[in-house]
Length: 411
Image (cartoon, rainbow, N blue to C red; front, side):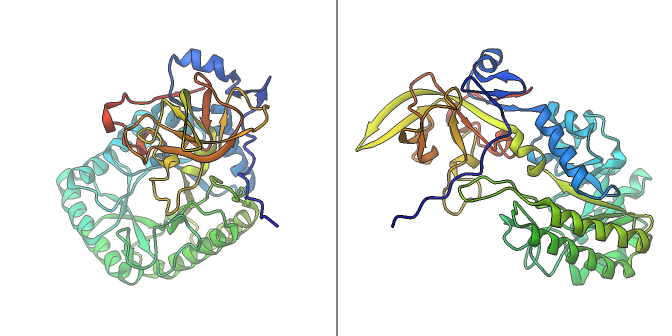
C-alpha cells in the first residue's frame, strides 16, 4: 500500500471569490493591475492586525509584545505594526532608522546583534534606545561612549544559556554561539556594568526560531525565566526588563501544522505572575517577527513560459530566488521543500498536473517549487507563493544577474 504524501496546512487566510484569490479586499487580477507589474510582494493589513489581536487574546495582559523588524522592514508595514505592538527590536543602524522614522519612542526600541560597531553603539546611545549587550568588548566601548556623550547607555545583558530550544529551525542559544554572553560569565559582565556606570535594565534571551512545538517553546520560556532569576542575584540594579525572545513558527512545508498558543500562553501567564512578585519593576517581553507577519504576505509572479524537458513539465515565471531566496530552499533549509503555492486566478480548478516552478535566472538553483501538483498553468497566469510575509525581499540577493528590485505593497 502506497503511503499518502503529507499535505500543506490549509492556506485559509486569504479569501477566494469566483475562483480568484482576494488580498486586502482586492481580487488578485485587479491588484496586479493596480501594482502595475509582476513580480511583487503584497502584505495584508487586516491579517497583520488579526494576528496581533489573536496573540493578545492568548497571552497574559501584562506581557509586552515587540516586533522584530528583521522579519520584514518594509517602512509602511513597520509603521502599521508599531501602532499595534508595545515596542520593536532592531539589529542594525538601518533598522534603527526605520524604527525612529516610524515614530517609535526610543524607550521602546531595543538594539541587538553580535557585531555592533562602535559607530552603531554611539548611534544607539545618542538615540536613547535599549542596547542588548552581547560581549565584554561592547561593554567597554559603551563605557567610553557614555562618558563622551554624557549619556549613560541603557543596557540589558543577552545570555547565552546552557540549553537549546528543541526542534528550532535555527538554534540561537546553548553551546558555542556568537550571540550573547555564556551564562557562567554573566556575573562578571554584570560587575563591569556596575563599575562603569552603565544603566543596567535587565536580561535578554533568544534560544531559537521557527518552532512549531508548543511544548518545546513553553519549556524554553520556563528555563529562560529560571536562569534570569538566578543571575539577577548578581545584577547591579533592579531588573526592569526580562526579554524572553520568541521562536514561534509558522507552517511552511508539507506535514506542518499551526502552532498551538494555549500551552505557551499558560506558561507565560505563570511566569508573569511570578515576576510580578519577584521583579515588581520588570516588564516581561517577547519579541516576534515571522509569527506576526509571515502568513500575511504573498509573492505574486506571472508565468512566462511552459515547457517540457525529458518528461518533466516546467512553468517558468518572471520571479525567482533572487527575490524569494527562502522559497528556493537556499535560506537555511537542509533538504529543499516546497512552500505552499497556487495559481492565484484558478483556486477552484482541479489540480491536474505535476510541475516544476522555476525562475528566469541562469542557474539550476532557481527552483521555487519542485513537482508540485497544480491546475494547468499557461503563460500569463499568476503564480502565488504563500507564507511570504517574512524574510522575503530583504533576505534575498536581489542584485543577482542584474534583475530589477522587487516591488512591495501593503493593502
